[in-house]
Image 1 (cartoon, helix red, strand yellow):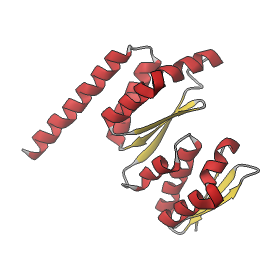
Image 2 (cartoon, rainbow, N blue to C red):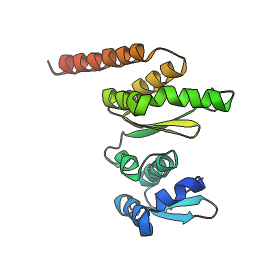
Image 3 (cartoon, rainbow, N blue to C red):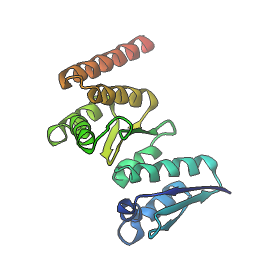
Image 4 (cartoon, helix red, strand yellow):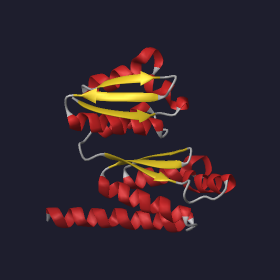
Length: 180
């Protein structure tokens, strides 16, 4: 029996459990792993026979805790190579205003910047609290992470989009060379 224990923010416990326990049930059914949620404490115990399924389920719970909707967090089950990566902004921002500014640059006006990065890398991105979380394949996450880091460093949005476009063209070129 493999067992993981983690804390979930009290603001996200409801999302994890879902209406009448529907989300928790769906995660358990899709992974074969049991979740014991203490909503008062915000502790979640994840346990089951399959260690890999426990790890994946832990990532799903972490993703929900980092602001992803359950639907988006469950993308981690689509492929065994899908992974969750979390960038902590707390270390990069010295004031609450600075943190807000960084979050704003990453999200963009009406979410356009975040949507653009997601679209050009095939990843899911959540900017929540003091973190930016990314769900996707490792090589795509790396590109999305680099784009987020560029925005954090103050690189103009257009330059970040050009970088993403170049990376997308390179990937397409590599694919063509691979299959020719």
